[in-house]
Image (cartoon, rainbow, N blue to C red; front, top):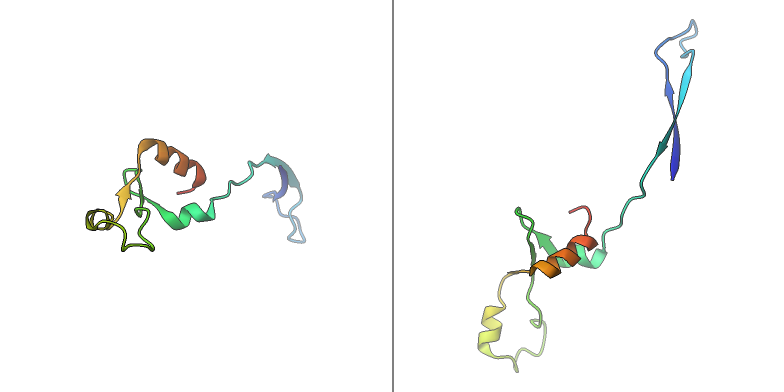
Length: 93
């Protein structure tokens, strides 16, 4: 994508309008989109790790063991391979 913009010169004529203009051609890289689902589910720590909520804590909790429910509290840090995928989904974290 090429974008044109006009930069006005420094010399000002009698009418107060610049006497010369420069036409600058700039090539811009298109912006990357962040996955909406990823920004709702994952957060980054200050050191760059990805945190997320544990899975299987929404419904059918009667059949789950007490140990599983207890260990699924809070957030967890994702593994390195999962962090790589999430980083691709969120380019501007």
